Picture 1 (spheres, one colour):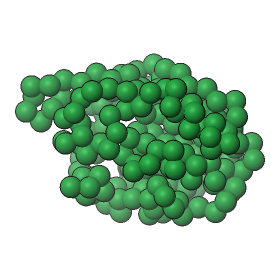
Picture 2 (cartoon, rainbow, N blue to C red):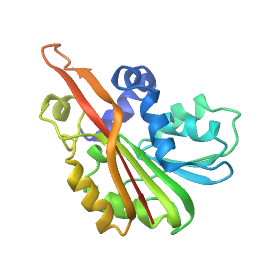
Picture 3 (cartoon, helix red, strand yellow):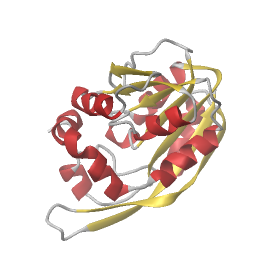
Picture 4 (cartoon, rainbow, N blue to C red):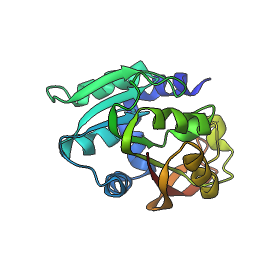
Length: 207
């Protein structure tokens, strides 16, 4: 099963599932390091059902929400019905449906460990940033919980922070910082015999 099929299948339950993984602390940290400004435009890449978008809209930004799963975007539209300022687009990590240098911020929360090529995904997110725009990534630190690869279809078992820092710099970003997001991601295997607690990092760079 691909990650797209996995998320298509669990779209209607994703909000409940996500709450058991991590809290709004991660979103708060992401917006904080970006120093978001009202009236700007942001992209929520791998938007899911809108965890990051919710914070951005509350902060007065316009949002382009991109996800490879149409089912996820359907659930997201239900959640934000009647709320203006959100543009929903279907797209994958290698070819985001957003023009060059057209947005002020790009956010990718728990997205990178599902893509085929993290360095290429970072370069693609950098492409859509305006000069001076910021890319913010929140994701899992390097870990060894193999059941996440089979049960949740993670492509990567987290990342070493030094690799994230290098990939951001290789994409042309400056003022790169990789730090702790202040929370762990916690989950159990389907059979209940394994429990994972994985620290979450936040990374930011400026184009």
